[in-house]
Length: 314
Ligand SMILES: [Zn+2]
Image (cartoon, rainbow, N blue to C red; front, side):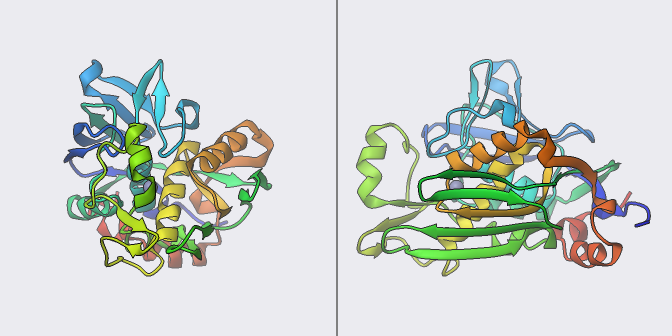
């Protein structure tokens, strides 16, 4: 027996509303966004306030076309570029929230998840009376596309092993970490998105980066970084981890297992989610308190910012 569930294994929402405003990276449209606390068991739900409060739950079923960002669509209503916000919510430990937006895209802010995590830290989280349900991986599921690869495997915690290999000046890098240790806010959230100056004209002409600026991305050229300094020496691979966490949020539950990705991107990330969802023998629902031995559970969770910042341990 592993005992009764501690607060680490209960769901959480925000203590109160949080508002953001800014432009969407792809649309260039100005967006007002408000995160609203939501009841236990409701998950993450986007709400288009400009379209009669039409709701789009953040699940793999609603994944739309995926190219430079991960977008959700239900009954032809779209919400674009959801991955950084979803990453922050999962990484920081927010289970239930309504995301009100008055336009078709989540604002890009500084291109990282740091503004979200800082807002969660100052607002605080409320522990709810419902046990968190995890998606425990039982066997490997893999997606390969040429030299691109992503796979998920059984394992305790939530471990990510990401390898990138980009043209100069990024080059190759690897990041390996355990998300369950609560390190997300410090190690992953500040890492910003990035783009190559050489691709800018093409992407602008395609209407893909109408909101792009030096304030919301690391801009690179073959000569180097145009708007340094970096926040981490390996900021690029950390941002890929940030994206992966956001995209895997579309599985609808926190994953318990090990994820390995090489040269992947949004299309590969979401392909994995969809393949995983289709293979019902590859996972089971599990509650956190019987997922790990109690000792390691206590150690890892005590370092979690979500736990330290939750003022109301129900
Ligand atoms: Zn990103």
